[in-house]
Length: 544
Ligand code: CFN
Ligand code: HCA
Image 1 (cartoon, rainbow, N blue to C red):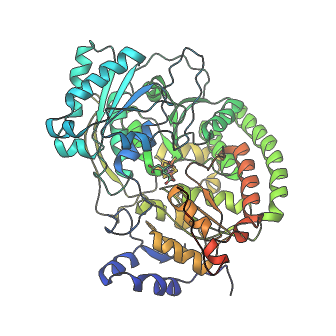
Image 2 (spheres, rainbow, N blue to C red):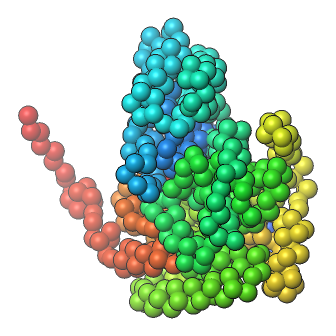
Image 3 (cartoon, rainbow, N blue to C red):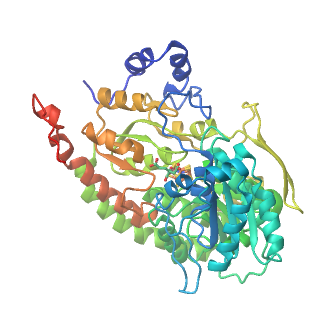
């Protein structure tokens, strides 16, 4: 048959009937055939049905691993049994570069209280205090963060009280704060992003007004985590264009960059899922406007820089940015032409996180690869629909006390997201026709008509997708990788990029073209057969 057609009915028949009735009914709401012009409602951001093998991670992972993980000079202590700290130790491949040998870099370390049974029975706060004293003695960090794991919540250790007490013990010489990010708190890692961002806002953002501007054009970049060195490439582009990156949340970041974020002129948001509320907070408290960009894809990167140029509307800056884009795209295009004969016409499936399943479609489009099916692990409806469900945020701007953050249940209340003054500036600079008013093109706005969009894909559904539609490449994470490759389909990890990257920016696009061309043109996965597929009888032999 036509391998470019995926068909909802066949898929649903193959999958949903095999579930218990109630489960099938629930899962049906998360599986839709896309129609960008008349978007169907997809169920998202709800609890995974127990017993289903989900791709998702936990709240602790979203807080400690995702948001705080890439910051180099905070000692991040996991308060819990050792497994939680161990499994979040560098697996995300976020990188960092210190400016000198004197600068702190704690990223290679794994700090944990290593709770034992007795701490569960009698409480772990004393052990945590001891760990904090030890961390100070050995590393003398500017800041110490404490992350709660599931058992901490269950036994009631109060990490916030411990943080206050220890700050006092150290005469306020170290900034210490805790995170109530017990793994079970939300339905996915998304809750952890929220908890992390609130604490960054309360404890770090806005602390330091003492800045020496390096450029007239100063921006924050939110939602870029330096996976596989992505931030280094983005930093290179900004530097070449003469734009100062005041802070990145949180790729290659430092305490001081967070503390100065409020002094920027503009905030750019890349991963919208993990951090959009910080952009809103910066706007509410400090009047910094923001809009969304993506640096995944050469064209997307060019577009991002053009938006920056349009915002500042400075002829010299615009000229410089256009020059950089022309220079970079020329090299990128040559690399694309090399890859294209191997990639053009191939098919992909993308099931990743809360923004990459969308952003990476741009890179695949540049390679002539069609995305047959895609979905998020923990995206919300606005990530799919490209519209914004307005969160109700109450911030006391002076004390930076966040009263309440809830997402309104009334999902009918959508709003074009660009503050009027930003919009006006962009219109003045670009002309009305060139401005993209709806800046929230979600996954469903991009993926083709008829493509299968599936939220919180289960392992069983993944196997069926592959059996039925044989994509040339499947993109997901480590839990999926080897299962998929054993089915003869190459899997590219779009979380940690396997051992590759950077994939962001212009250099990154070229790396991606090259890696994908290799993966889809090798026959190795089809050659490999398991012993039981090759032989009638497989004998096991025992070696003592
Ligand atoms: S780097 Fe980001 S881009 S932060 Fe988020 S939603 Fe995760 S860790 Mo894995 S790769 Fe993934 Fe996104 Fe934003 Fe990463 S798609 S799942 S929580 N994610
Ligand atoms: C996380 C982090 C993760 C996991 C990736 C994977 C990452 O969710 O805790 O499943 O392979 O990017 O490292 O998303």
